[in-house]
Image 1 (cartoon, rainbow, N blue to C red):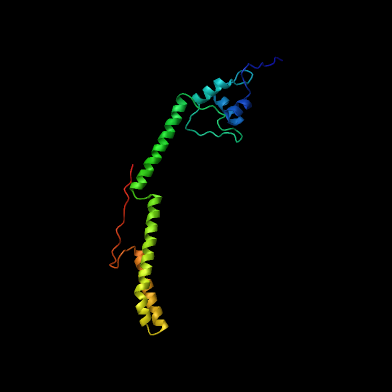
Image 2 (cartoon, rainbow, N blue to C red):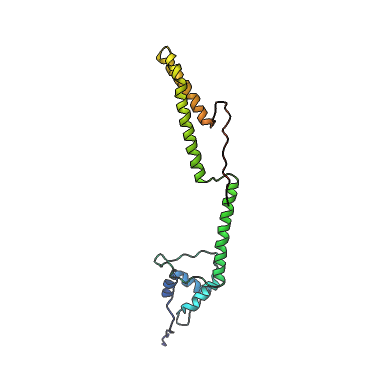
Length: 186
C-alpha cells in the first residue's frame, strides 16, 4: 500500500483550523464546499488556503471562531474582502449616526449634561419656593386659634407649593416657565 507523502509547508486540517482561529468542522465544511483545497494526502497549504478562504467566503456571513483562538491569530483579510468588510463597517457606523441624529431631531434623545442642568435648576427653584412657602404661612399659623386650624393652613400652603413645583411654573400666575433649549453644535 503506497504511503501519502507530506509536501513541505503543508499542514493538517486541524492545524490549519488552529492557525486560522476556526473550528476543525469549519475547515472541513470549507473543504467540502470547495472554498479551500487540500492535496491528495489531505494536507493544506496555509498560504494558498488563506487566499482561497478570503476570496471564496462571503464576508457578510458571520463565522464563529474557536474559544481558544488568540486574538489576531487568523490573518487579516486582504484585497477585495478587506475592502468589503471595511465598507460594510463604515456603512453600519454611518447608519447608526444617522439614526441618532434623527432621534435627536425628533426630540427622542437629549444630552445628559442638559438633563443634569435642568434637574439642578428645578431642585434649586423648588428649594427657593419651599423657603418662600414657609415665610408666607408663618403669620397665618400664629393667627390660628388652635392646632387643627394651624395644621389646615400648613397643609393648604404645602399643597399649593407642591402643585406649583409639579406644574413647573416660576410664578404664581400658573404660566409654565420658559424652557431653555440648547443649540446643538456640529
